[in-house]
Image 1 (cartoon, helix red, strand yellow):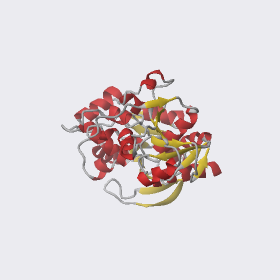
Image 2: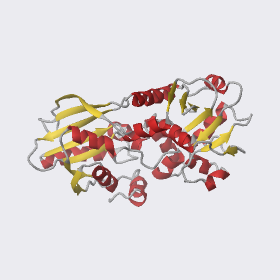
Image 3: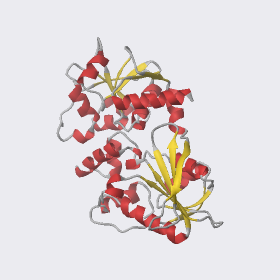
Image 4: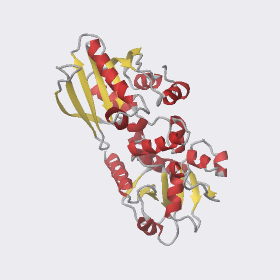
Length: 349
């Protein structure tokens, strides 16, 4: 438990622009730093830059061609001309059109790849771009181990924090149950519609989408999916909507908007996420499995077009008795988005 708390503190420190240490190596998130924080972090020698393998490939860094894995982090030696603004341009691919000329860069072998991977994993958990300043000398706000990061990232723990009746147009007897994560500040909810009738509930796992759910975005199908799922659960007579705080397929709201900017430049949703240094889908279905367990539901009928959700829940011990297709209308703004879901992410549309 103490290691989990330390990792949570490290995530908070990164978001606040404070340095942390992993196995004795210091890191400062480029996204939340500023010139003053970098000068203090540098000390007597300039800190190097650590970026994701996907970003390194975009920048044509030569040692990424021979990396052990395509997504292996890459260490850039800090040249005198690499100031704070240059580091930000290196970190954020959404700025590539406004800062097209970068380099030449000198890369260095990673002394401890597991530490580098843990650092970038921690940045992703914090919702930040996976790009860090790194140095071995100096103070850190929090010190943790790479093993603690790996454990923290794969063992979500949620508990029921509150519940209440929530009459809605989908069911006057609906109940909302709020869940708090023990590992971070995320709060998720489940909406229970109808009453158990001996059948596995019809379950929809819906990841938060502010732009689609609340602001009427036409770039995705999230808003219509949410409305359609609630209506379908109500028609079924018994089911649960899980509303998970995993914006942008788990990359966070700000990074999702960066992905939007990359889509405006011609990249699809998968390539946009990869260029930002994330996987095409960073969501953690272990959270959904933990919530279903807390609600006493070990078997479900899953309302989804995404086979990964079925496989993810099954691997976590939730029996999916049936995959129920979930169809919503398209519009001219999301046709390419849906084609990418089908052709590159395997959704059965």
